[in-house]
Image 1 (cartoon, one colour):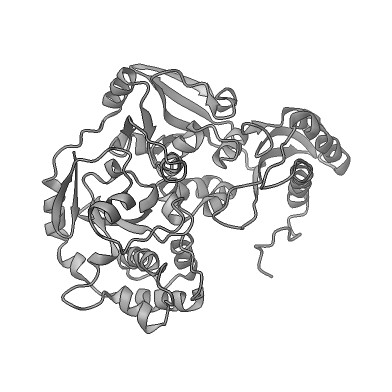
Image 2 (cartoon, helix red, strand yellow):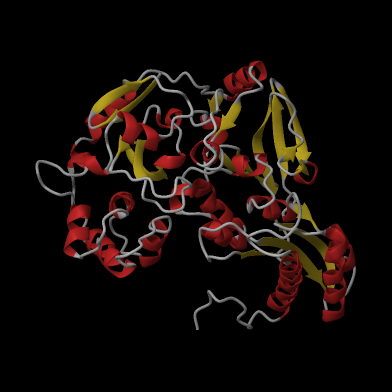
Length: 472
């Protein structure tokens, strides 16, 4: 049984766990304003907003309905474009879109409207901040428009955020909170202990946190997932804590929640996350899922390998810590045992100011695209000699993998061009990349070598502009 708040009423549904929110809205609820464009989280036409309790109010978050399984919305408020019009009047975000001529064919418009709705809610939560164009661009990063163009859409965003207005959702906040509190307890686990015992009893179940990768089995491959255990309600798995030695990230902490901490601790990592995926995907996706699916093109793996991360694994009441180097065994094969799951990712904090992290993502699109090659390099140079080197790549092998031969050529050697060239040649011992529709093997190898050279230039000549995203 799944219960959630929609249109001011508690909805109770008995649906298969692998039913997506988009399927429910269009097939069962008759709410067809939410569109299916790609069914893979790339276009944003299916964007909806989830509201959940935060402090004394509600937090509004955009998600892709096509990639969100229904158990994830238990105990939350589901808001679709149909809910915005009130007493015969358009919502301010809808009016701004119309006034600024920000829609032509209209297919993508509901998704843009919902992203703008969430952005406006966040803006009013920090009312004194001026309109921030970069935040608006991030909010729309997962929404594609094929005909209107983005200038009028951004104009609508500016108009709404510069003059935010109270709406029916603000007026009904207390009522919504009361309704949410009245919702029955979920049948999914809510503590780590409950999760561990259930997964131990049902090891053939699929664990799902954000589901942004797993849902593709349903939407793209038309498979069924008969047994699914949602982690959405296990709050302990969402914790992010810092000690003097490490950052501890719960396996179900979303990428959006991790971004501020990682951007502060490792700016290059934070910058990668801005390109990692769209806002909607970051609001759902997790590092636990990114690592557990064992994909060779998951961008989290190379960076966490370069940072020397480890995993806290749990099976029943037993725990063990495993270096990430030992976790990936083969293509989508990991060291997880039956009934075992990732509880936490642990990233050592850097205490040496001389230790530098550089991260490079090469993809066909700058943002919201899968990497052809992702490189992460943590280098420390003292007195002109390399004293620390951890280098990892995604897209170069069947798993995200460290370049150990390359590292060996750097350690203890002078940080100069001749050393770099030997390290570049050593990459051919570390990797035998494949050719696929993203890139050829020759291209991947050449790019990997060039990224190593770029890192050297950036660290030795920081005044040299090396990236197309630099503004002159």
